[in-house]
Length: 197
Image (cartoon, rainbow, N blue to C red; front, side, top):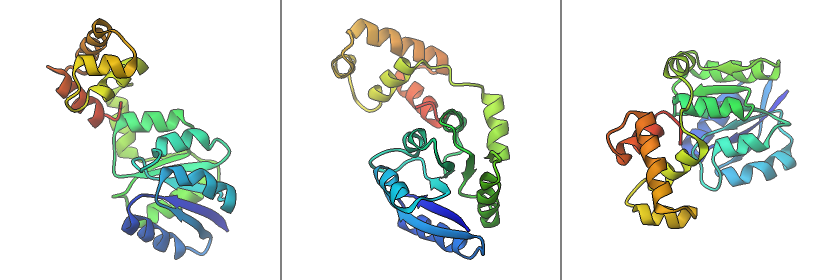
């Protein structure tokens, strides 16, 4: 039996995935959690072979959790078909990345293939990632853009990140140029859409 843990903050989705996988003769859903910061304890307690993670969860994102689960086979199951998320997931060592609108049978097949040592990536997303290219933002530019989301002023950003206002302006200018945006709000939107933040 392949022991599976499911982490998704949406009860209906989590329950649906568990019910679908529970119909498979060779898959046993041993635990379900609704927060990213509950995953590590659940992994220690239930010792799953494969961990299915949503990306956006309270407490800790699926990508952050994946970075801490190097001894487990991890599959990202998400609505976010963003090339930047795929790149970050692969950098974290995940074994699979599938989108939630994939056919149900595909998820069970992915769990089996990952268990067999394969790496499984949604083919359409893989093509998009190849055509979009890698994330051009440095870690600091991404951090400044994340902080700039919303109504934060340059002074606010500088204070939060312990930078000078001039340095913040330089990072914002560079990020705006790299995203091809006209202003910082558009740069944040582009970076989020591509999964770079």
